[in-house]
Length: 184
Image (cartoon, rainbow, N blue to C red; front, side, top):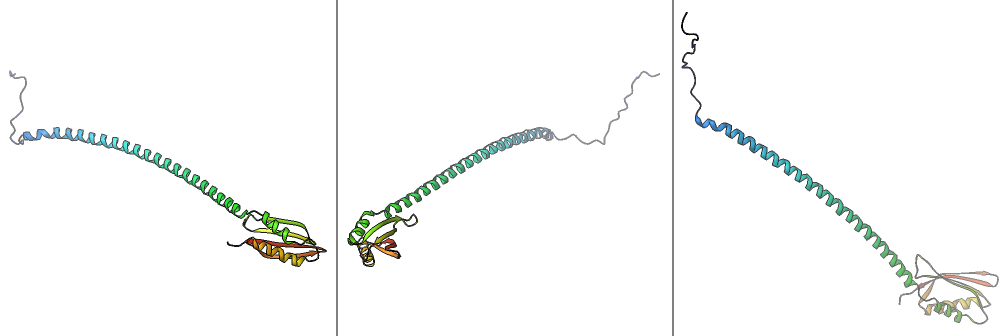
């Protein structure tokens, strides 16, 4: 036997390529730097995404708050407009509420002593408060001349009769008219 226990079967090889250049040692460093850069960009994107979601939720809350305030202002405006409309109606009612006592006095003074006034009613309409509904019940012999005198006396107060109607029941003459205020 031989003295060598192990033989080295390795032969020198000439077909192998050369070693890589030393600049290629930077490739793993560039890989790890790119990996860390990618992780940083992903983390920053995640944080920006969360911040954008928070901003969106804040904007939604502000929008809802502004819409609720707008609705509250619109309802308050509607209430104020309805109050203004009611006030205008009251003002129109008060404008039409001229003193009716001078009308009653003129009617009483226009009638002669032999004619009796059994009933006088002066009513205002809600739709047109400036107009007055006049109803007179007269009892006497010269009712037609008395009615003309009453219309003339009312005309002195700047009222004119609109659609006057007369009806006779026995000795009583009913006179219905709408008094319209003339422009001054």
